[in-house]
Length: 220
Ligand SMILES: CC(C)(COP(=O)(O)OP(=O)(O)OC[C@H]1O[C@@H](n2cnc3c(N)ncnc32)[C@H](O)[C@@H]1OP(=O)(O)O)[C@@H](O)C(=O)NCCC(=O)NCCS
Image (tube, rainbow, N blue to C red; front, side):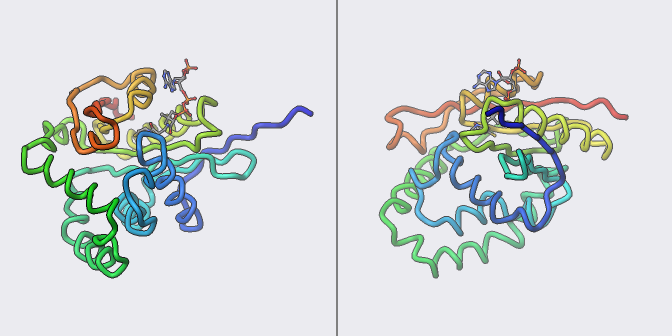
């Protein structure tokens, strides 16, 4: 039987929140589950998504295939504003939630946090600032079974159209995923920076590559 493939790209709605958080958890480790390095779906869900879905939902999109959410793109028109909201409003409640949930007593989490702190102290989390020319940012993830079907491309296209309408001059993003890097090159993003991240060395037994891509946007 020939199955129809009906792809719809639409704006994020509050009813999509749980599914977006679920996909983000299941793809957070270079396309694989966050469970490989962290225990606690609620805490990781907040850390990765809360700003985008709750404070700037108008910049988020979902892809539906035959009415099933296949992937999402969560964006922010201005990364500096997003980071300020995260620092001023979100990080403290998130810390308390993590404390109450026992996040900091879980062995897997302790090892991850220890490795992040080690990288932070040694200056290994620094990156150049691209927010002046490329103020917007994004995260995109497609469920494994829906990858390679031009869904990511359609989400990026919808987001870039939206940013142009909003007169945003550029967008940049960071990815640890080589597959992600190949995808963004294919979407005519320019590689702005290439570095390494050490905090997953205890899992990967080597540094992870870090790619920062950017794209300038012609105004409409
Ligand atoms: C990376 C990702 C977003 C791409 O979305 P996708 O729907 O699978 O990709 P598409 O089918 O839209 O691909 C669009 C184009 O990019 C190319 N492409 C996609 N992934 C690629 C890869 N790993 N290597 C080379 N090219 C790739 C496709 O071949 C296609 O080219 P075409 O237009 O000439 O046919 C998706 O695979 C994903 O979520 N991966 C896991 C998580 C991740 O890496 N997220 C990005 C980090 S922010």
